[in-house]
Image (tube, rainbow, N blue to C red):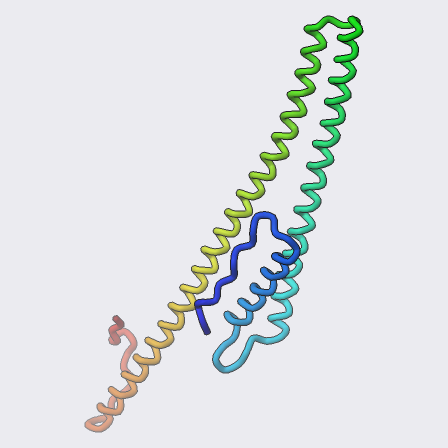
Length: 191
């Protein structure tokens, strides 16, 4: 099993092709990390992982689309309302039906409201990208930790085999001179 395999990061706003490539690479990673020397990963386990990964990718794409669509509709509605308000009060001021100050205050308020809603839309997008980046970094750390744990488990297995071989050799040597029972595990010293 190679630890050199690495799934690339998913961009902040991925295309359908980038999502598909990411899912394919994640599935390859499942296969690489799940197989053992004696046998491969079971098909049912691989299938469950594949379904899960595909469902996550589709759900993320749908949520991103719905969020963008909702925010776009909100900005469009506020823009239309603000421009209508500004147009109405601008017309009222030009016909001398309202004082200049009152008309100007209403137009400024409508413009500021439009600016705030548009700014909130951009802030949400920025916050979403930042949170996605944080999640990717956390997932990278988790995957790195999993690789380190697997490597340590393999090293411990190798060390345990070496110690068992050493113990078997010691027993064979001791059996040549006299009979020796099993040593107590507390007497063994590990590195």
